[in-house]
Amino acid sequence: DTVGKVIRCRAAILWELKSKMKIEEIEVAVPVKDQIRVKIIYNALCHSDLHVIDGSLKTRLPIILGHEATGIVESVGDEVKAFKTGDVVIPLYQPQCRKCAACQHGDTNLCTSLSFSNEGSHFTCRGKQVFPFMGLGTFSEYAVIREHMLVKIDPRAPLDKACLAGCGLATGYGAAVNTAQIRRGERVAVIGLGGVGLSAIQGAKNAGASAIYAIDINSEKFDSARKMGATHCVNPRDVPKDGKFGSWFIKNFGAVDKSLECIGNVQCMKDAVEIVERGWGRAVMVGIAPDGATLSFNPGHLTIGKTITGSIFGGWKSIDDIPMLVEEMRKGKIEVDPLITHRFDLEKVDEAVELLKNGKSIRSVISL
Ligand code: PAD
Ligand code: ZN
Image 1 (tube, helix red, strand yellow):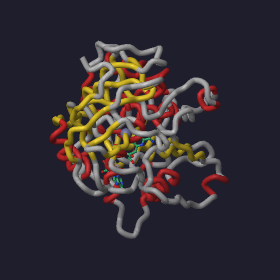
Image 2 (image 1 turned 30 degrees about the vertical axis):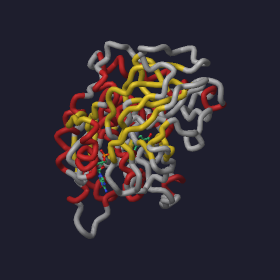
Image 3 (image 1 turned 60 degrees about the horizontal axis):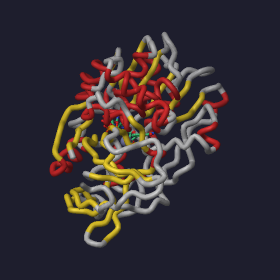
């Protein structure tokens, strides 16, 4: 029985930028107040984890990465009301407290109740504090998570797939249906065909888009894109040397009603703005640009009525909406199998990193 005791378990720690993670034995604190200790079962690797490793997303070190997980509640702090031992859960890096101004506002999911950059740590390794990525740190067999950053899901859901609802699938799908607000018959372009972009394609398809242009410099992604619902696959490397992607795209395919950038590349963000219709086009930024990046474009795009926006976690009110997404997955209305290309044990997490970095995988699911 582990309740009330510090747990010693395995976790993958990133000690330095641009290095491999090391599997270490760590201590995980007893949960107090609104904290919940969760046994993590599966965690899929997302490109945001890679952004930390390569230094383009600044965080404190050493850190335990991971934020796309499923788990089971091991024990709870004395103020926790909604969870008990044995509940099946998804950790949420985007909290929902239901009390702050953002939670009360119908148009945003950006709850301000918890700022994970100021959160302390519940992990130690050889006497040293280790920080949890985005308040989660789910590349650990156990993690301590605040109550507003956790949601119960149907225990019948397949946990190795449901973890994708904790980030990539929810982010891309929601960006399409909530942020881009894709309507039946619309023409859509998705730039970047990773777990996020492919999920945006599926969102566009389920929303009834009439044409979905899947855009990536890696043509190996096109099979998956077609499986998710893309009607056309476009490789920007086919643009003639003296040409610009935006004008080339419009000349060949026409402008689109909605575009989604799912990479975090400033040039691709500009392209996303270029290729939407004047008057009503909407360009949605989903990818996380490197720390300190700026985006510049001709303000005429705004004068002629284009909308430029973006979202975190697909705009979903996390606790309200994620169980519904898991339910749609369970019923097969949202497909997840084509997104899962590899599976590894925690010891092999760096193989998953190499595959994602080199464009050889969509999502690798890691068993803890
Ligand atoms: P991924 O690495 O699986 O996919 C990125 C794709 O972009 C790959 O297929 C690349 O080949 C492609 N790509 C790279 N450069 C170019 C280029 N110049 N032109 C065209 N295609 C290119 O990443 P992912 O799907 O896991 O994540 C994508 C981004 O979304 C990444 O920046 C991540 O940090 C961000 C993200 N945002 C949120 C959010 O809440 N906004 C959540 C999760 C992930
Ligand atoms: Zn993610």
